[in-house]
Amino acid sequence: MTQIKIFDTTLRDGEQSPGVNLNQLEKLELAKQLERLGVDILEAGFPASSKGDFEAVKKIAETVRNVSVTGLARAVKSDIDACRDALKDAADPRVHIFIATSPIHMKYKLKKTPEEVIETAVEMVKYGKQFFDHVEWSAEDASRSDLNFLAEIIEKVIDAGATVINLPDTVGYTMPREYGAMFKYMKEHVPNIDRVDLSCHCHNDLGMALANSFAAIENGATQVEGAINGIGERAGNASLEEFAVALQIRNDYYPYKTNIVLNEIKRTSDLVSKFTGMSVPGNKAVVGRNAFAHESGIHQDGVLKHAETYEIITPELVGVHSNNLVLGKHSGRHAFVDKIKQLGYELSEDKVQEAFKAFKELTDHKKEVTDDDIFAILTDIQTDTSNVRRYQLEKFVVHYNSNEQPTATITLLTPIGETVQKTADGAGSVEALYNTLDQIFIEETHLTDFQLNSIGQGRDALAEVHVSLTVDGDTVSGRGSAQDVLEAAVQAYINGVNRSIYRMKVK
Ligand code: KIV
Ligand code: ZN
Image 1 (spheres, rainbow, N blue to C red):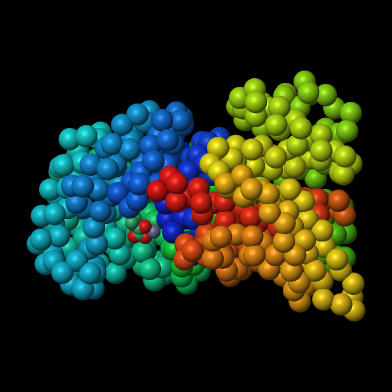
Image 2 (spheres, rainbow, N blue to C red):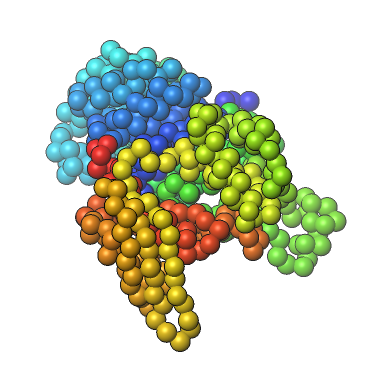
């Protein structure tokens, strides 16, 4: 069995998804979950792009120990220096240097000749090698590059010290047979190619990202790059959970294995969608809500008689448990602390106390508290930014009558410690609440998107709201979860404004 390394770029390419902006605490929680998932390499960000990204990469590098952490760098010294500084305390650091190799990118974007591109690539790989044992070099837009030129530059960067060569399908343009042929060509024409791992990185513009990744490993790639839930630039990256599960299910066909802990997939997917606000479509392979639902009578009958008639993946394989009722109203602190450990969380004593209080409050409203509910409480507490001054909800009232305009009254504690109460109306209850909040905020706030989901199933499932906002021109997302839909909506709006304030503070 050939080992395929999994390179996760949820926090870098994934974070480049339109409308997504994760803060440092969220990135750290995701990094810890990706470590539990068993990815081999974690691309934590692009340290030279902003102070916030630098700090997030640094914090992740200091925290996770069982995964190699990398940062992205353009082929310029200052970007590589930023990676060196951000990754200095990583257990197993690596730098990821990229430069474009396609004619269109070299001519119009880089304004360099092919010879200049080779010179820069070689020089920067040598520079990176002074600080890193592992240097990944990417030929941006490789799939639209000239194969002879690609072979020439690859041979030179390997001689300069690169240990991984990545050939991205940057614009998601290639078809599987073509993409596979590029890997085969490099295997056959680059004399020193066996000294490195060959890596694929596929975008999904034509829906080929996963098929292209398989074509690459069929032709010699030993590393696959992608993102959880397939998020990323434009149509996204190859979906890592789909890749890992497909390899597992078709191990009769493919002699490859990965280190992915399959039953951590669902939780990782949920966390990514919660933090990014990008909900997973119901019919998405492996992690979609309907992935294991059988609707037609013929299918249901077949599954009841013998599950494998229509079910090729069991929900349990990816960590979906139909009956994960865990704790209830009468569960004590001891059982709760055990559950926190079981879920892989390490919390300070204060935070355990806070989480236990939130759990008890939840059991007042919800009979069945599941692992998912507890996980939601823990992630909210771990990513809470309350050490920064912020708006806090004290109470709200909504008057709704189907024949009149709804009105809302909200009492809020402001960042300067004042208690303010306002009233406003709107065409619907949520609009009335948001109009009221707008009267209290000193920040100029506009709502650009609103999404409502449920966490778990049943009438008493928690409501989760994601909003996209502009706050004083800053694009930001916010989320809130609560038993009540209106409360989740209010919390999400306040959370978005607080996240913007937090971002300004740590920028
Ligand atoms: O898609 C791409 O080409 C990239 C590179 C920076 C690796 O994300
Ligand atoms: Zn990419």
